[in-house]
Image (cartoon, rainbow, N blue to C red):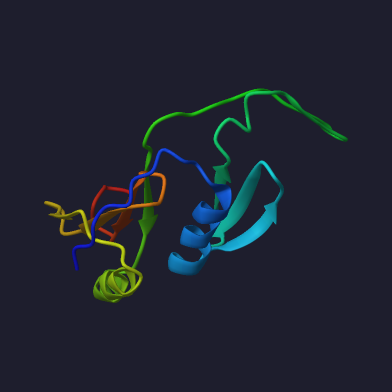
Length: 133
């Protein structure tokens, strides 16, 4: 499935939530107007921030979070079982998400790459890519 890439200069947290929740299937742990935190497989957390929402110190009852910021397209990978790769390709296609690239790694693992609504590169990767995965 090859769908046109969805690029936008508009950074919309609700649109990002739609992608990560409805397409990827992640469940939010907590959210506010600045960000949403997702549980990823019970052993990782994905934080998705509204652009510019982290440029000021946040004061919480237990302390502060210093300003931080990332800009430009990022790359993140979700580890999936080898047997699930084809199902992910079909699922993404059903949601109009085109596969941008595929890679067969020398150790035997495989990757597919898509873009989220904010042009971040999302990789779905099977085991046997790195010595530790």
